[in-house]
Length: 188
Ligand code: URA
Image (cartoon, rainbow, N blue to C red; front, side, top):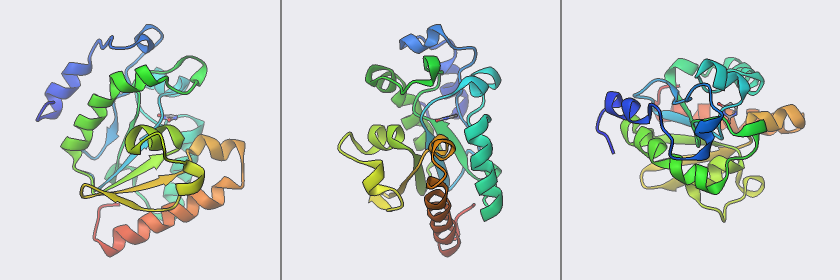
């Protein structure tokens, strides 16, 4: 574990801890406010993210941005990262060994950001962070406290592209996040 961003970012350069390094163009480390109160965790980079080296810049990210705009959430106030930092082929779900190989980078990011709230975007984020026994369909929209951090699982924005009905839940969940942030004076 590193106690500063520079060493952490240097440590990931050229990473070959798992097979995803074979197909990547760029490592997608994370983006946003390094002192954020609120952190968003997705699954892994898609084609656009792989090309640009930034998380959530493709279709799903644009949809998330729209929700942010509508609700008054400023992307620059939050920190956004993924479970895996390299693009899985055909955007498949990261395999267990890939997630395990990458999770220490994310743990280190969480230690440095010190977020008060972590939004878990979709099942992959939920299961890898809180445990395999968790279910996104049962737990989305419900805040859970663990070791001084509040976790809010919600749908992954890509799921909204496949199922319009999920947009209502996603908006509702982010609205609750906004409300909590305002009550607790968190940067949002
Ligand atoms: N989906 C994710 O989970 N993360 C990204 O960065 C982009 C799409």
